[in-house]
Length: 114
Length: 114
Image (cartoon, rainbow over all chains, first blue to last red; front, side, top):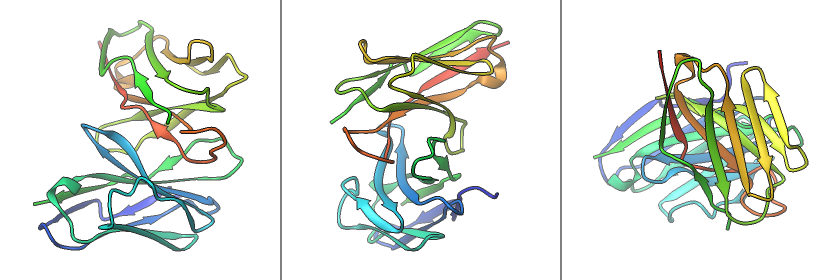
């Protein structure tokens, strides 16, 4: 199993540009989570899906952020337009309902908005 | 909503000693609490889960306790090694009845000196 796969690994973009982060969860996992990590705020939950349906997006900072999960094997997190304060590491994680094995995290995308 | 506090940002110990990390939460007792390890530039890795009706859980040199009266979990690493140096995060569900989603503490950075 290749684990949770995120792309790109690093992204540098100019303020105002659109950024799309991608995630492939572990096959068979029916929960998918997007987190953002910064030194100041730690790991913050942005949104999570269950069976491809968004369940809680209360952590999404504002309308500039959107997330989709068109099928069980793919999710995107989009920021449009991007701002310097969006600079952070964005993690995707997945897990299975009823199996308390913890989350499996991807390696993250380090986003820098200049 | 639930809040998590990890006792210190950094903990330095000598190789061979036992490291003890603390996780406190503020409100209701969660159904389960999890511990993760995070190395620089990587995503968190799941270590252990303990349920509210369990007092203690062990895995090799790791031990986790859960005291719902004190609203606290302790994470112990016995016979610590330099390879145990990392940031350790605790996580729990943010409100009663929530399934799947976790909130994380900011972590404690452990350094084990040879």
